[in-house]
Image 1 (cartoon, rainbow, N blue to C red):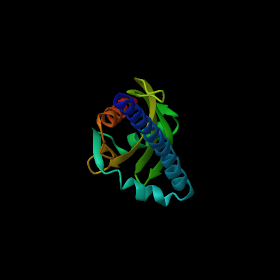
Image 2: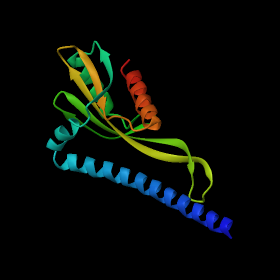
Image 3: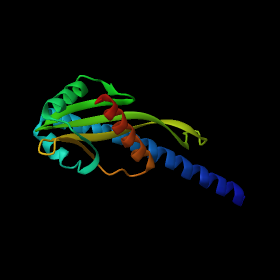
Image 4: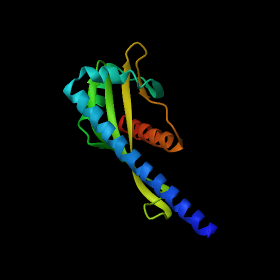
Length: 165
């Protein structure tokens, strides 16, 4: 009897965890879409949001203003950079604000309660900032929360650097 109660309790907890994770993923995507729509309606919000992307992730030296303008044009005319879909991009002063989405496989618990590889989406935003006095490009984002986010952000940066060659 105790084993049955314990089994039911574990099943209920696992189900709750799966539902919370699914809700979190959906909420993250809706939050990203909401932010993009806010910025489209009021471009001044892009400047406000860009200040939140304050962690330098990478830098590329020897980028003059003309080269930065070419990089911006290339990115803005693309739908994706490797497996990172560009949801929206907007210029902010001498910077470019990017909203991206990537699909990745993670080992997780499925709705059926089985553990296995699950396809997930994640959203990452970047600010490409040209520094004319140093003649360099600095890419900013937010601090990553876990190893998945770190790996995904590094993957985007590597893909972005390939497009600049």
